[in-house]
Length: 158
Image (cartoon, rainbow, N blue to C red):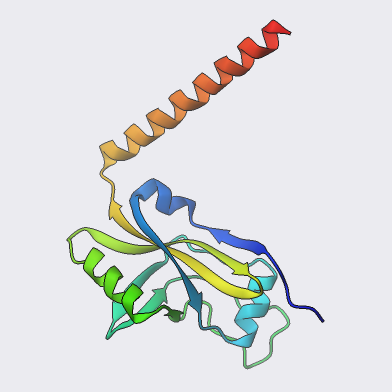
């Protein structure tokens, strides 16, 4: 059977874009067991409460929910276990420097397959205050309204 090509999205963390100001982004591989891969291929995963930590020079993904595989046996994986991320030493040291400032955290933005391999997109995020969130919503609404007005004008001209 030929190997997969391209990118298949599994899960996005929309809450992270709302709660954090996103900085540097990086792609990392995941160390998974067989039933986790099968569950991901079914498109079942959630990154809502997930975050990443750096412990002893290794990066770990925590609280990422990959539900148990429906056709699994007694050897099925646990849904919320911590998973090791695959990064080069230079990438890990760059992330450690970026996290040195207070109020920063590693947030997973997306989980996907690229050419058959499971990948996670990490970002250095700074927590937003409540007024930041309101400002973001206000800007989004203004942008939508402007696009709507522009579409109405183009329809009237026809």
